[in-house]
Image (tube, rainbow, N blue to C red):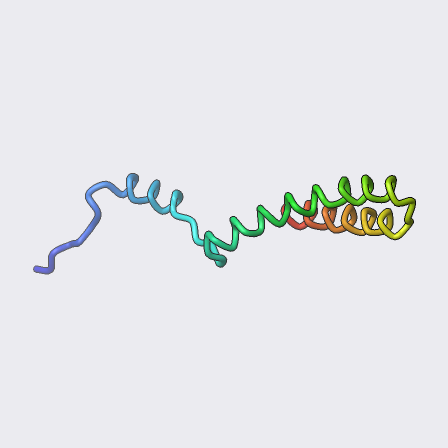
Length: 78
């Protein structure tokens, strides 16, 4: 007669399966991307400050482009 190898508590095993998560990227990449995200959020502010001091329109265009990039990042996260 073959032994039946069943889990003693199937309900507990299912809870453990739900808590397990698999990610494609390593943790250091996630941390680095969060740093880059904050840099992208702060760049338009710095560009606007520089544009007001110098009076150059190129800095304002850089601020607009980085704002658009930050919006794309927000859309892809959700």
